[in-house]
Image (cartoon, rainbow, N blue to C red; front, side, top):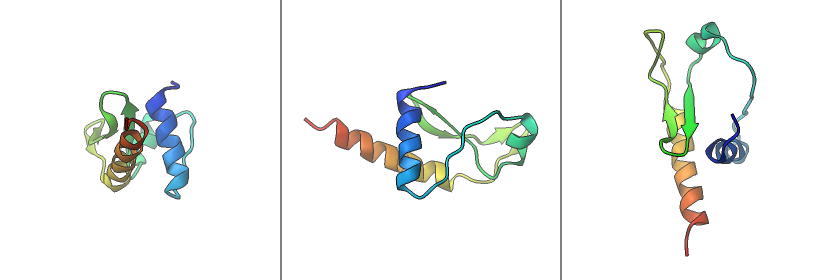
Length: 79
């Protein structure tokens, strides 16, 4: 679903040299992913730890995006 956090994260991906794709996902494609994260305005960028009982191995990109997101939001909200 469209959202402010999602839009910021997608823009940050481009700035960080990360390829972002949007599309339909299956449980199998999620389970095969090396990294999965969710975005929302409360938790910002949230790495997913497990899918269907299987550990998701990566968190580095999620944490990189979280740091970039917090920097971007802090810069945008300075008074």
